[in-house]
Every structure is written in structure tokens, then in C-alpha cells.
Image (cartoon, rainbow, N blue to C red; front, top):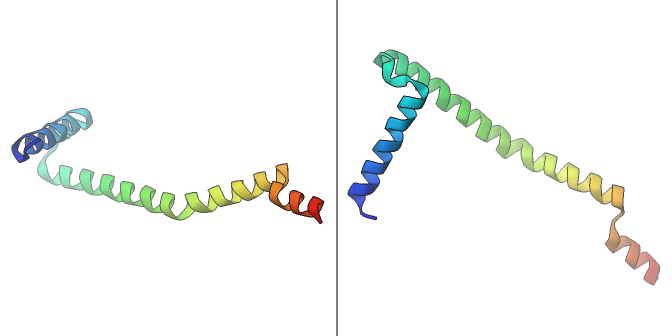
Length: 80
């Protein structure tokens, strides 16, 4: 895939985005506000996922380990 076709594909994706969001009908200052809001929301969602999802996964993992019992500890106690 060469650079020109990649550039055309990215432009096509941008045009699709404008069609889906109807932002092609907006004035430039409205587009600026719209894109700023959307990018801000995206950054906030990604940051929240980065900070909180690993903690929740860890807590769920610990919960299920306690619920089903930690197999490694049970085998060690039986061997002793």
C-alpha cells in the first residue's frame, strides 16, 4: 500500500465521519467546538479506562480467587 492510497483512504474515512455526524453542515466555529468536545470526551474515556479498568479487573480476580478458593494454597496445605 503506497502513501497516496493511504492518504486517500484516510481522507475517505474523514468524509465518512463528517457524513455520519453531519458535521459537514456546520460552520467552521461550530466544527471547532464539536471536535473539541468530542476529542475531550474521548481523552477522558481513555484516561478513565486506563486508570480504573485494571483496578476493577484486579478486584474481580481477587474476588473469584476467594470465591472458588486459591488452588495453589490448597495443594500446598494438603502436601504439608
